[in-house]
Image (tube, rainbow, N blue to C red):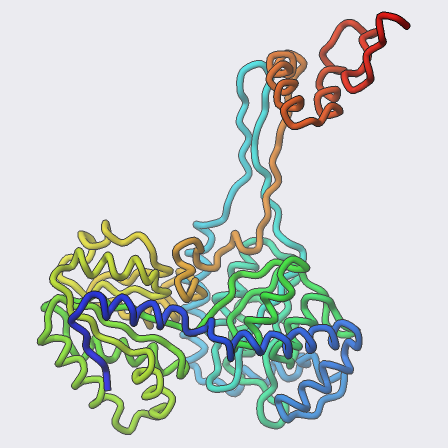
Length: 447
């Protein structure tokens, strides 16, 4: 089931195909549907949300049922085990500790001649967190999105998530939200939830930033509302790339590939190895571990379409292929992972060594699991406190400093044909008050 490739040219072509899997015509054609949903929610507000919830989620709600009640939030604690609650609380502590290290600080620099430069950081006022439902419940996603927003100092954090059977929400998700600091939760999902957060309805507030992964419709909606609000990223299907040498355990590698594939039929699970025998052993292990797998059908689809093992001559070649793919998750299952790390330039999150499966980062290590996908790690970074913070530049010039740069500014304003820019400096620095503004037509000698 897991394909094994030995030719570098074939491997590059397959990796490109996998990277491009979200850009086919069928995917892009859904954008028109999403655009219509957004426009309808923008015009009709709550009534559109209720209509789409009935149509897509098969749940009939009234407007006053959109927001999760305090009683439901309290009851959720009675529906989770003590072990799960302890795990959620541990994850919250680790995630918060990590993100507090990433909190940017204001700075001011005093230079010569009375020049002062700096940056001032301020959080957005409102953030919207999208938590997917459907195939699984994701309390980890709640924590990974909400805690950085809270650490950043966001005043109001709201969460949206699709309603399940009988309008219920998963109790672990509700407990995770409360432990992460969220009390304002709405049972609405899909593109309609993104539209509501971007434009506001009678019940849902308009926010400044929307974060959190979702299905294709959610991703397209985030793309279309970007500019009205900020977003974290356009998350595609999840992916893992494992670089392994002969020191790797094939059963562990296979489990790590399947851990990614079980997310979604479009999830990608890729192994690049210097050991041909390991590739064959991993292939056998993948098939064995899939037997009686609870999510066997969708996991098999992911492995069949987007699973791959590539045999290369060296770890240098493996790193080069990985850098071209720019994976969301990169595992270095090699004898000397820190040595190989020096050759890695592009990855969302990097897991080093044989005892660091991706699941450690997915749940509670602390670094965020909301990561760039589909090659976006070439230019993008994981979700962090900075996602919810904007900065303003600080600039102050003294009269002496302005005098010193006036000539340079004048030259640049003339080059750009913007005379009033130049005058805004000249009028502050010139001593001859009778001089005409530069943009006025000079008087003729014959006048």
